[in-house]
Image 1 (cartoon, rainbow, N blue to C red):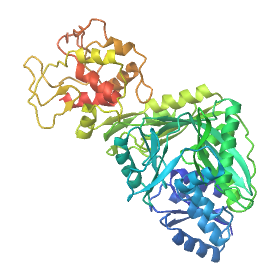
Image 2 (image 1 turned 30 degrees about the horizontal axis):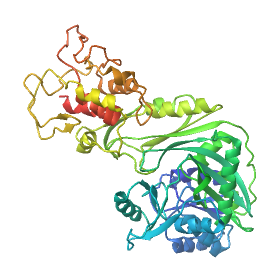
Image 3 (image 1 turned 90 degrees about the vertical axis):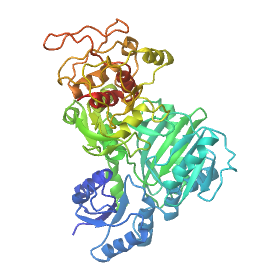
Image 4 (image 1 turned 180 degrees about the horizontal axis):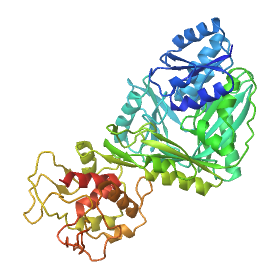
Length: 565
């Protein structure tokens, strides 16, 4: 009979663990609170158990141990390393001490351990729902986060006292225990690191650059493995990480498991963000490090979990792997195009699509609300990065014109979510001076029409400026000139230029929009449609460009869909 191992979680991030355990000849028992977890069918046995219920999982594990044996328990990419440690300790299985796992699962305990060990981490204070904010003496900027969640949920930067109350309420809402921490903001590039711990020995399994955007939130739009920072800085980062692992009690003489860290390189040197008692999620341990090095850290973690000495951790190659996310402005997905083209690009290894037609999408405020991810690997860093970023830009998400949440986003003037294109003052002034959209057929206004960034559909249009785009899908529509924007080096959320964004609009709407607008100022250019007739009185003006600036190609397509018959 095959040795059995319990793997907590049966989501996408646990798929590699299930696969590798089976390749090692183990009988896999996956447990998840979601009965429809996407990788549940991969396991030899599935148990529908709430992963927060450590006593319930202990009882289940004990029943397996008594009826055929149980070799170990592990997780990767979940919040539940403390549950793993609890069960391992109770059943005498390989693992780390439960108290050490709590240190790595509770950010307040974690910070206290680092303070006690004299390690570089930000000053902090803990808060609950019953606490006031009057006694917080830390200087701004601050970061507020729940003590017991992952994926950036409820985590945000705060620059003023007026923002602190909302931020703490949000963090507490995401905390299972009703607690959060407020800590000093650490400024500097961020890195992720995975490691295997076996009887006190820490083996590093890769250091990656994290690419963080969209303040006040901390949205990881990808990571690149390995880092390209100098060797001395890498050594300092890893030395600080290993000291943090030991300070939490994860690397004692009998400890067996894994550790994952987020480390920042500040002006004062390395500082510890967080360290967890597991391998990472976010595709790093299961995908990007194996593609980069030829080594699977999950294999080593599984061997350790069943009491075998990990081996085959020396890198076999030195490739670069780049993971990149793609995102959307708020709305309802009407269609997604470009997926297969992205999959088939050179060097692309995987495409994970979370958005779906008919589903809601939103601008991300954490790392679990993105639309999908691309993973590319190549012998050189430039090739891997280019492949991942090109593939991510190839996927186009068209939003349903009936969803008023998109219109509300396009008409908003907020720092967050940010505009797709951040215009300097001169370009903002130029945009404001553009003439408005002029079209050639009209229909009465209805309650369904929306105000979209400067074009108020609820205000009757002059008779000479009709309000509806009524043209065949492939008719050429001249654009009012916005040459300064078209010539700028500005890019949108995903790195698309203005020209690339217009190409996406053309692809989705069928309108043969010229990519480079003419230089003739504020008059519509002369042009001909595919029948040879002139369309001098028809062009897309200020509101079209405003929608493009605010929401990228998605905003421009939504604008056209709203005014089109």
